[in-house]
Every structure is written in structure tokens, then in C-alpha cells.
Image 1 (spheres, each protein chain N blue to C red):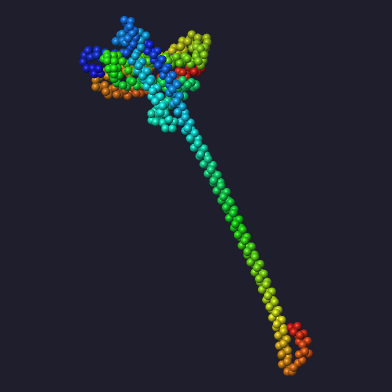
Image 2: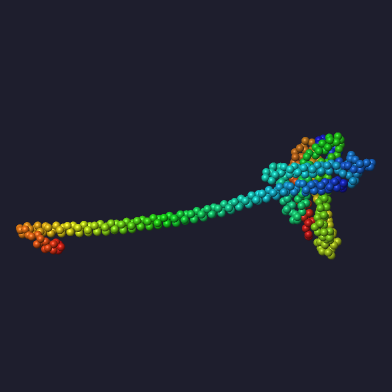
Length: 156
Length: 282
């Protein structure tokens, strides 16, 4: 065997380097590795959170869009209904107005007819008198016959 | 030195000398005349006994340890969370590899295990990598610096049993320390005495459990040493082949890239597993 005190020297050196490594080499490197791991994990977590947020926002916007569409459809429907109603009302009004105008015209016509009748009646009596004058060839006392003629005229 | 001619007994002598010179240590200790100093031959080095130190492997070992902490500290100084450089990525991937190994094999909470595993892996990896450097370069450099062309200098620390056993007994010490810390002295000793056959077969239990326990550091240290000592000897033999060594050295070095990483990883994993056992109650 060729063992000598080098074995102790090596052991001392060994414990020195292990101590040095334990104090000044291992902890800083492991700290850097852990810090980087933590940052990567944080970054991934943030990305995941952002993805979830985005999904939620997309779902929300789709919901809002659907609501808006339904609302818009309802408004258009309502507007159409209202327009129809207005048209119907206008038609009704026009019809009534027409009726009223027709009624007015009818009344006026009636009045005109009556007036014409009256006029005619008055003329008929004078024509009848003139006719009778001609027939009788003699002047009839107008005053004496007036009563009879008026009676005739009212019978017309 | 690397080119020995193909003729006769004298050449064989030269080759033997070459290999054994490369396997010798630059050892500092008490020489036969009672003074302290460097050994000048393998025999002199062997005669120094236990109280001597292999200056070459110890020096390279400490320099590589400093290189390891220096490179990592340099990386930390310029490290950022958001924008890591290529260099930082490499360092981080090593740390993550070690961290994953610890997480997969170690079930307890202990802040020592991560840095321990990282130090073992990186340091042994660097020591093993010295293997790839052509066998003459570093000794030649040392000889030039020292101004002594006969200087012994062993450049690969893991080819020195002292270095590998230094690792192994340090880990063994930690195993004992944490076993006693987690289970108490009684619990720790009880595992040898009362398993696997219960308290009526204490001697048999000791006979079964103790060798297995003691084999842990021995196998750890010897496995690493054996792999790299053998690899080094092959490198030395290849280096004797003159120009033919170039493709052979390349092939063996490529194969050793695998061994270097594998052995460093294996030492680290076994350390983690042994310490996990030390923390667990059986």
C-alpha cells in the first residue's frame, strides 16, 4: 500500500471546497434557477389568466350583441306596428271625412232641389195664370183668383 | 522520451524506466538521513513511510479545486435571471443535472448534499480530465520550471490512491456523521447488531453488516483509482510507440472521455445514495 499523509491533505482540501461550494457557489446559482422558474410560472399564469379574461369578454360581447339584436328586432317590430296603426287611423279618418263631405254635399243638393222646387212652383203658378188668361181670353181679376191659384200652387 | 527505438534489452530497460518514472511521485517527507526534503528516487519515496506528502498530485488537486470554484464564482458574478449567457447556461445545466440527481436519489432535507455532489462531480471530472493531456506535457513543464530533468511529477490526481481515498474517507466520515446525527449512536450501531436476523444473532449480524459498511469507502476509492491508474498505464505504453502513438492516443483519449464523465458521475451518485442510506431508518 502506498498510502501517506496526502490522504489527510486531500480530505482537508475536500472539506474546504465543499464548504466553499455550500456557502458561495450553490446558493446563488440555485437562487437564480428558482427565480427564473418562478418568473416563467408567473408569466404562464398571467397568460392563462389573460386567456380566460379574453374568453369571458368574448362571451360577454357575444351576449350583448345577441341582446342588442333582439332589442333592435323588437323596436323594428314595434315601429312597423305603429306605422300600420297610423296608416289605419289615417284611412279611418279619411273615410269619415269623405262620408262627412258626401253628407254635406247631399244636404246641399237637397237644399238646391228644394230651392229649385220652390222657384219652379212660383213660376208654375204664373205660367198657369198666363195660360188661363190665354184660355179665357179675357182678363181675369187677378185679385179674385189669387186665392184659388195659391191653393193650386201649394198642391203642386 | 516518447520515442524509444525498437531494439534490444537496453530499450526494454528504457521503456520500464520511462513508465516507472512516470508512475513515481514528487514526494516530500523524511529522507533516510533524517532530514526533510523531496525524494529523488522511487525507492527513497517508498522509504518515507506514512508521514510524507505527494506534492504533485496534491498541488494539481488543489489547483483544480480552485479552478472549479473560480469558474463558478466567475459565472455567478456575471449571472442574470433574464438573459443568461452561453457560459451561464452551461454552468446552470451542470447544477441542474446535479440537482436532478440529488432530487431523484435523496429523500431527505439536507443543504449539504447539493453542494457536496456538485463539488465531487466537478472536481473529480477536472482531475480525470488531466488524463487527456498527453502524458509528458505536464511533467516536462514541471521539470522545466524546477530546472531538474529527473523530477518526478504525476499530473493526474485520480491516479494517486491517496487522492481517491481522501475523497472516499471524507464521504465515509460524512456517512458516519449523518448516521449518528439522524439515528443516534445506538440506532447507528443497532443497524449492524440487530439486522438482518434480530437480536439473538448479534455476531452473525455483525459479520454480515460490517464488511458491507466498510466496503463502501474502499470500493469508492479503489474504483476511481483503478480506472485511472490503469488508463494512465495504457497511455504511458502508447506513448512509447513513437509516431504510432498519435492515432492510438487519440482513440484511447476519446474512449477515456466516456470514462472520465462516467466515473465522476458514478462517484457523485454513490455518495448521494450512501448518504441517503445514512439518513434513512432501515
